[in-house]
Length: 241
Ligand SMILES: O=C1O[C@H](COP(=O)(O)O)[C@@H](O)[C@H](O)[C@H]1O
Figure 1 (cartoon, helix red, strand yellow):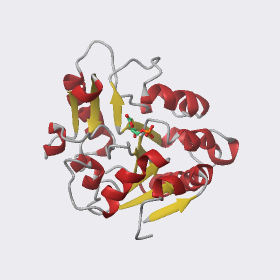
Figure 2: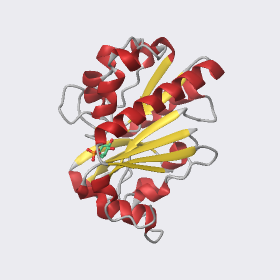
Figure 3: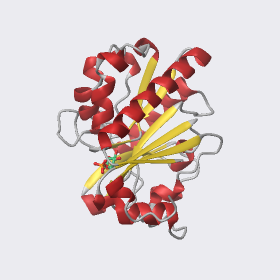
Figure 4: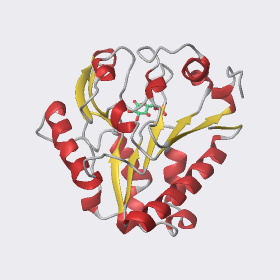
């Protein structure tokens, strides 16, 4: 399902409603809500809204468990940190117990070893089935999502849940959930804003299948659903909407 709006702020509201609904349903059904956050610029509006009383008051934050879809391998106080941004915009303003928050980056460990450690945290909280209640994703102008970048070996991963690796094109280590794990989620929400994403979005949604070049094509939930929240600028090249 794809929702297109002129104003990305409107999509922030849609996402906030969706987050609240998903959290309430999961907490009612299982007593907890397992969510993976995304980084980059696109989710900032959502995080800001969730920190406001209107939405904040609707979520039982004590029962929320926060993971990330991916991370740039930098410390939390670095301006590139996805977790740092989420703390600043959201997590510092809502009562999620600190023990329920699982940033991907950690000091004194390699990204590869951290990926194994992180898999352990996921197995403890999600169980062996690895089904997230909600995963938020952004999409880059090259069609990447999480840290599933075009042409990287992590795209071939079939078994591991989390992978750490050096991303040569950006000269930085990354850590990411893999596509097979993401695809087990009950709900996946993509945020795609800006005309610089229009060409890639067209390829991902309406172009020929080529996930090595456009990794967001790999996101196809097994039993869950995927929702695309797209502004008019990013949707400008789509024909079937
Ligand atoms: O590097 C990353 O980029 C993507 C897209 O970011 P955006 O700024 O274009 O929204 C993001 O989803 C990912 O978490 C991040 O590590």
